[in-house]
Image 1 (cartoon, one colour):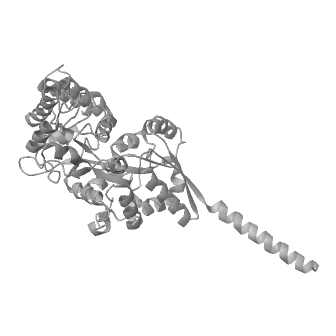
Image 2: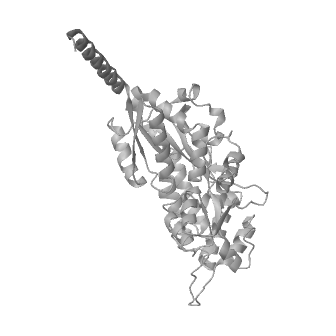
Length: 414
């Protein structure tokens, strides 16, 4: 090889290495924390993997941890300018994190990356706080009534005809509550319900009787319709034994999985688990109230941007756009059981998973619990849950407990 040729070869190698270095330097790494440790973890990991493969200039480095660990670490780390670039949590936490000044408003995400008119309106509205938008949708769902078809058959009930009204739900719950071994104790529960450490279930009971909890800063939890709803359900639990007292959400899941509970309210995250456990079950819309209207709980997880990561905003927006694309949402829905975040995906696209179709239909009848309240968690955990437990453990009447709760809530939100 001549000297000139050697110089040319070396020059080409240097150029290639230089270009590689530039390409590597341009890759943006985004750290992403969330708590999707359940069966839907597979779909989260699948979408992140696909994004990384199709966006070589961006790399999502994801860390999944239990939600309790997630919340213990998140705010303290964000408060000192550290933590993940992107975090995912229930939209009820947006007011608290926005007020803390640790997450960035991302209104411009909806000016060129995501068309807000394609999103579920109630979900999009819950991403806002004080006129600014702080989140990008990660998921949205509502709760449905899960019911055990085999237990229905054994009780002489039609497994293809779940309860359609609250009156029917109570009648079915009584028929399905049994002492199967005649030892004087209930060991099969007709309808189980949790108050603590759970996705909120009791609001559905209150709404189903025409009651409310809080609306536009006014407290309704101690009004007659709400009191009547709590009193009626508590009576069925205490006097008729349709549910154990003091259950957590996880304990409700376990009772249904072990076929000791015939009915309960839950979201789509348990569908695959119950399928794998071999449970013969169905899902149905929550019971209708007297005027024919159904109102179930709506809940949504949003992805938020660390305020210290504004220099990576465009990369984060690309990920948010990818996640909420039609293709990604169909993959997410068919695999996880969650309905899509978009309203422009037809039922035909989801037909291979009838559970997704049913959960998608429930979106129009859903309502957020304690929306846009900075002290959401305090009001729920420190006021409403203890009030319900006082009623269930006979420490107060429904009227007394809810009057006290209303007084405390007013002091918190005023």
